[in-house]
Figure: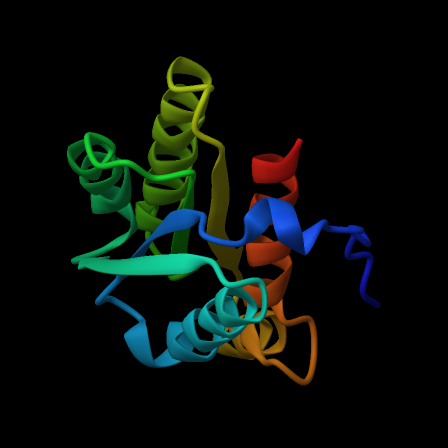
Length: 150
């Protein structure tokens, strides 16, 4: 089941815009189809996309803050946290989400999309990231484009 919103985007408003995509080296193999989907949407709408890798999801907020001095029209945080047998999953997820929310509300003139996927297992991760299934990369890109145009 895919409950993705449908956005009716004005490509003219997006042409020439520049976004920052911060993603992780951790789980890079899982995330690469999502990165590809985001870049494909950027090409479709003639949006420039700077991709920056950081170690893991916890480092995404700090990486965004360091890069926010550059002139970006929007920011997309993309990470993957897979539940394990320890409290690490909950700690990483909660802290990353809270930090991204803080950045989004304190830098409200630059839209930020939280694309941190939290899943119970690798199958759920693949389902969400696959361009043939839920295609969250495309969904995150279109959500950011909607925010930029709003």
